[in-house]
Length: 341
Image (cartoon, rainbow, N blue to C red; front, top):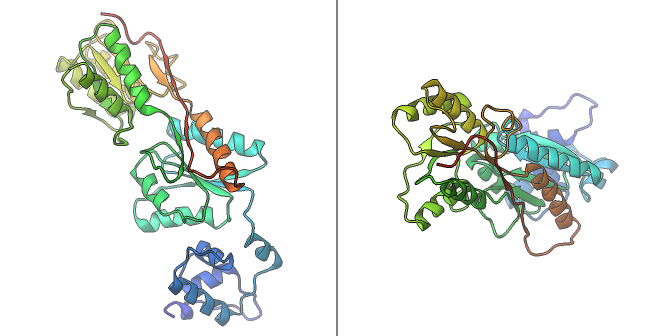
């Protein structure tokens, strides 16, 4: 075995599960699944672990034996960005509902894009033998991580493209994108420009909702204006749009982008909403106190987090069979950043 020689124990010390993992050249989570009798384990990995157990004389403690056949009252949470509004509020909802049900949560941030980075982040959660995992599937990194979760682990995802074979919480972004676009057209604007967030769940995103409304009404669909998550970059976009004579209405992909665009437009002497209407998405806590107050689509991230926990526990307890799709609808919030023309 390639890594057997890399493991050396102090004289008289008792080997632990990490020693077995190092000797076998696998993760601690893989050893845990082996001890648990999981069927989702390759024959080669099982052979390596069995050999490592024999070499080290490893004997699981009575506590470890108990954990091998029951999961901890912990829910793992995987998110590629815990600072964005949608992530932070969803995690709040997850924690609130988990605590009310007698569970704790463990958060692991997906802060790398390589398979090795993702595996390390996932193993941090799986090593505690959780009752299940919630993935905030807001981007491609989270999607790849979700695909690496073993099938024997109860799993719920929040957001992203539909996956009919797993439990999923939908934030109804497509419907929200449609509602914001329809709202601006109802105010008399002839078309709506869209500044997109850096991610797009094909077919179900807020951008898809915007595009569908324009197509239904025979309005040419302009290219999506790109920016980053940083409002400072959106401010630069706002300055550029002020000199390019854009449409009289802009649908920004989220409220932070809307804030940056409004500042950029005003830097160039364009008034919101007198000269141009700007709406956002999410209902950020600053949207109501911004100048002008931002008309937006309020997504209920906290409710989505709570729904993820109740759905996960129902799956864990065997109360559901077919995969569940739970829709958490949002609502239009009118403020001062958009006006009738």
